[in-house]
Amino acid sequence: MKSGTTTLHALLAAHPQIFMCEPKEPCYFLAPDLLRRYWPEMWERRYWEDESRYLELFAGAGAADVIGESSTDYSKLPRFDGVVERIRAFNPGARFIYIMRDPVERTLSHYWHMVSHRGERRGLLEALRADPHYTEVSDYAMQLRPYLEAFGPERVLTLTFEELKAEPLTTVQRVFAWLGVDAAFVPPNLGERENVTAARVEQVSGLGLLHRLRHSRLWERIGPRVPPGIRALGVKLSVKQVDRSTVDRNAAIEYLRPLQQARTAELESLLGRSFPQWTTLYGGTGGRS
Image 1: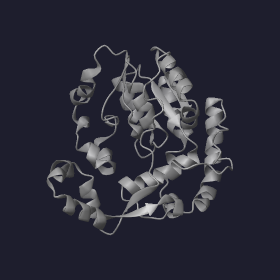
Image 2: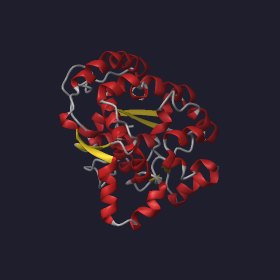
Image 3: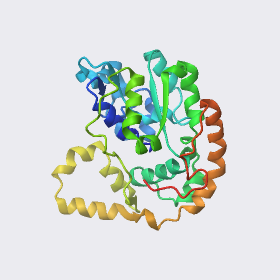
Image 4: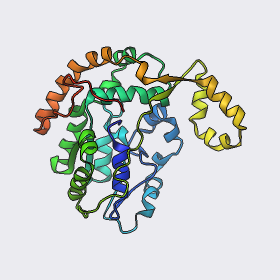
């Protein structure tokens, strides 16, 4: 999550030998009660109800050599457990692409995602200190180890957001080669970045019920019939605009570094590689996205 998965999904989907489903995150292998608690909008789509409903997402795959999906919740231990076991029971020959990002930057971006989409109202540092989920998702060794143990390292490809951003063609062609499809293919959407966090985000104000309504399946059905003036008033009452550049990141970065440096050392030992491009983690200023 927040490591370029949407961009990578789109690049894979552009390949004529690969079929990636939409929505990209059906979350079929999550326990339904947890999905309902943490992502009710996806729970309402009810892909989890039975296997045939899930497989309908791939009905258009045709003769594609590779089919896949990109549910980031499959690597969010300990919040979502049992995922590896469910996938292995479904397809013991499955392969996995795990894309990582400077864990400090990923954690900060995760916070802003939660502000925009899940009603996070706490300040940046307060939220990171209070909710370990923000940093657990950035504990890449913890997230990867069950997949490596269950499927073997030959079925797990790791790459980084920074690699994809700096050398998109080289990186995506390496993925194509690993998947066994035409590695010379150049995606027409190579220069596009998907799902980038905006400079200004909407933060839920006091009327959180209005915000939840705006992000519900019910609103998908009735929203287009609501007069524009009423919709605009609802937005104004339910959220406030926050300019991310006005929020001091320094205290949060200093809080995150020692924790995530230790976890990255574990990751480096697990994978046998280092991550010098993670500049914010190791003392650089980093960027914003």
